[in-house]
Length: 237
Image (cartoon, rainbow, N blue to C red; front, side):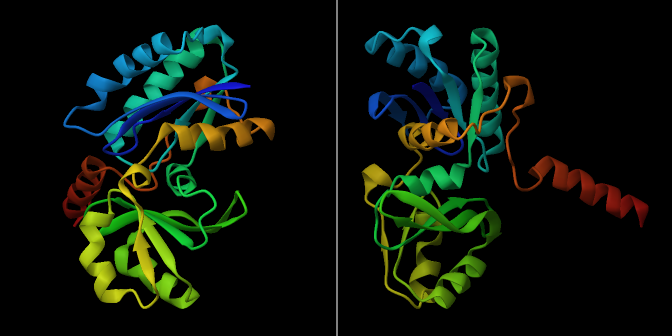
């Protein structure tokens, strides 16, 4: 089984190829470039480095959301285009689940935090039984204090990761009532390798979709959509 995985849901752009139990290669960038500048060149370079014949892929996986609206659209369009051209299925992996999977086997409760602006975060709660990811709270968009309240109620040690950590670190330090830690730099952002590893499990269970049917899961309206609804609301009044 060979899967190409793509993650452009946040600040990081990442591509990887998983083959059975091995990761053949991963290319991850987190440096002042837009995903439209980096994603396809990274994919092309990775394919060259590992002599990848795209026709040998069984499926193409993508971090399906939530996350940056622009990033998700770029990732989705890239994967859909490739999947349609190659006649391959798409595997959509929840972004927050994949982020949690970076810490596979960790003993503590895992809380990914993605900055969703306006003091909100894309988050969820997870734990591992061996290497099996268990979802305590499905990915959602909530106020940072809401997820901290749930963590305090559970009452177990927790590890935080994601681009929301520097944004919410002070709030965590002031409001967390349980022992907590933060993931190290090589594990604290999105990685296509984690998307691909989860996608392999999904593929084995038949959790694939036709490329034409794939669309990102935003979890909430974009800023432009929120502003439009607000204007319509005021116009009606």
